[in-house]
Each structure stands twice: as structure tokens, then as C-alpha cells.
Length: 548
Image 1: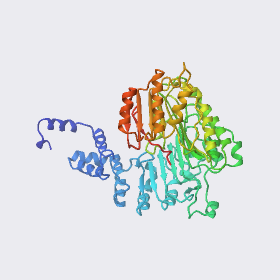
Image 2: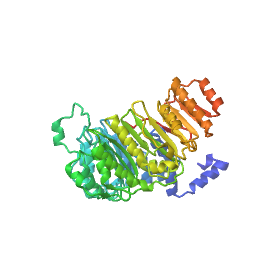
Image 3: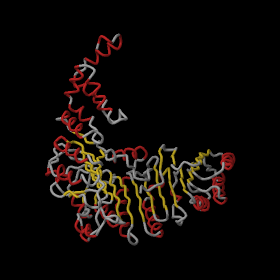
Image 4: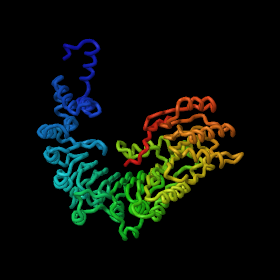
């Protein structure tokens, strides 16, 4: 090899050859990851090329078992290839998929069972198992993996396409032997979560194990009666009282119907929890949140819907939980952000998280880290769905009143309501430090008018306001256009002029935009047709969606 190299290349090669075998092996390891190659097969091909460079490199690759475990493509490789690579990778621990929910190994073809059979020949080596499967492999996984010891398992995610609610693992989980298991995620499948083997979990998420609101044709009452059902509030509290190390808890359509005994349960303390995420009905979700004793710094992501009648009792429980979180909201928080929205007359979005819909490609830890960059307060993300607009407005006003103490230091306020809703009661005089106001559709009409008429001579509403953002406001409409002009003129008259105006999908013509710039010395950011609102002040995109 040295014979064909000269000069600097020869010197570099000699330095490479001086590396110990262990370090050289880890250099090779860096060239096997999915992030390096677009084609999943490139990792294996690259490894084979490395082996052909020289005898030493061949020996390093051959003896470094971890290298072979990293180049297995469980989705595309033949069963025989997977089997051979698993042999070469022994005794290295196996990562079947990455340790992130949104990057599973999809085994959804006829070869799935054969691949799984090959993987499960040595369960003790499995460190990460992240699978997306159809219905048929479930019983095989239950029998050949879930009921056997998993001494090195740390991360488990199984997402199935099982018809509700057929994918239930009965019997001891991992034969009560999975001492390293810390992260458990199950979608449309479940087990007994009260078993001791789960007591060391730091995160758990379960989704899609309750009866759908609109049952498909294949669902029958007989099936409902004979199958296992999702844990009730009582069942979850029984399980959670043994999970004192939990940091992240996510239950999405995973709480069974409320029962009488659920109301008499004592509180369960989760002192290390950092983020609680629940999607359910008011009866179940609010009761569970009410029965959990959480750190005041714990973030809350709740999507709760009313299914029958006004949820007054559920809202009272939810308010109690929110009040317990309030002490962690600092009195003077820099760059405090708040969104308060009523959509379609029956849906409330409320909180301090700039995102609206569920973030499918971020872990809970990443979500909290991103939130911490813009807020010193605990994360709050609420989506509440009601049956009647009157209930929506009533509970919106109550919810808004709950956070009155934070408004004096709020810097950015997204306030949206549509034509289906009467204008909510907002104490604008409390927003002394507000710099950015974001309004949607027809809401600027009554809001901008009210800000003018409610202001006192020596104490105008929103004295610090510098930026107004209008989204989908029909500025082609004469009355809406007049409302905006009157507001800008009024701000000049009280010597509190705006510096920035953001217009998103407003239909305003350019001559009107130019006139605003000239008459009111305001910088106009005009965005005509982009369906995603890009917040230039904070550098992130926000989609107007509740994540459905």
C-alpha cells in the first residue's frame, strides 16, 4: 500500500496505521450510521470496501462485532443476510431501530415473522427494539419476546396496526427480568402496566387502546366484552404508584371509562416527572390529572374533549391542577409568550408553547429543551374541545382569569377567535409589557375597536405594543380595512405608534400596503399566500392545527 502513496499521503497513511485497533474500529463505526449514507445498504457495502484495503483493516473489521450489528438493514436485507450479520455481530448488543419513537423498523411484509424469529434467537443481546408492525406478528412477539427475559433491554417501542383491542400481552412481562428497561412505548397494543418489572421506567407512552368514538364495521359488542380493555384511572394510578422514577408520561386515548371507584383514589406522587401528556375525555383525563401530585415545574400537554354535557366538574379538576403549577411561573419572566384561541366556536387552544399541533418527530426531552430557549415558565399546551359554544366561551374566560398574574410581564400574545364566537372578556389593561399582538381572521374588528374605546386618557391599553400581526384577516373588506387604519391612527395620536405590521394571507393589495407605510411610518411584512405562519421574531414555523 505504501508503494503507491507518496509525500503527504504516505505520511498520513503511516499515522493512520499507528492508531490502536480499538480506535481504528471506532473510526470505521462512524462510517456505518444512517446519517452518513442515503441508501440503507451503503453501510454494509462501505464495511466490505474497508475490509479490502489491507489485511490489518480486514482483521479489525472482522473482530469488531459492534460494526456488524450497525449495518443490518432489518427492513430490506434478506432473512439469510440478517441471520449472517447477527452471527458476525455476536456478542455485541443489538439496536433493532433507533431509540426514538419516530424511527422504528417497519416490518410490515410477509417476511416480518421470519426476520423477528431470527432476531429473537438471542433475546439477551437486544438493547433497543423499535418496531412498526401489522397485526399478524403480534402474537409471535408476545410469545417469543415479551414473555422471555430481556436482561439488556433499555428501549422498547411497538407500534401495531392491530384492530382494537386485540393486541394484549397476558402473563408475566419479560418473565419479571428486564432490569435495564427505562423507556417503554406501545401504540395500539398493551399489557399489565402494574408489574414490578416496569418500576424503573423513566418514560412511558401508551396510545390507541380505547374504543373508538365511531366504531368501524369490524368492531362488535362480543369482541368488546371478551377482550381486555384499557386501564381506567384507578388502573393507571395503581401502575404509576410503582413508577416513582418517571420523567415523561404520555397517555393518548389510553384511559378506560371512568368508574365509581376512580373518584375515591388517593393522590399518587410523581416527584421526578418533567412532562405529562394526556389526550382523553374530560371525565377520565381531568380526574387522572387531579389525582397526580406533580412538581410545580412539570410541563403539561393536555388534549381533552367533552363527550356529554357541560364538563363543569372536569374543568374544576383541571383548574385545580393548573393552579398547582402556577407557583413555578416567575413573576417577571423575560419574553413571556401566551396563546389564547377559540376556533370553530368549540375548541380552545391555550398555553405558552409556540407550537400548536402534536410534534411527531421530537422527543419529550427535545420539546422541553426547545421550550426552555424561549420561556422560563413550565410548558403549558392545552387543547380543550366542547360541544356547545356557550361552554367554550364560559370556560375560556375562566381559564384566562386563572393566569391574570402573568399578564403584566407577557411580551407576545396570540389572541384568536373566529366568527363562531362572541368576543371573550380580556383584561387588556393588564398587559403592560405586551410588545407583539397576533390576531386572526375577523377578530381584529372588535378587538382593535375595543382597545381604543376602553383606553383611559392617561393610561392607554397595551402601552408597550410595537408589533401587530394579522392572519387571514380580509383586508379587502372595507370595514376591516377601516378598523386597521383607525387603530394605526389612534396609536399615533396617543404617541404610541406601531413600528411593525405583519400581514399574512390578508388579501390586501400593494397600494394599500404602501399607503400604510407612508401614512403611519410602519414597517410592513406582507406575506400573501404562505399557509404556514413563519414567526420572524422568534424564528419558528407554526401551523394552525390541533394535531388531529
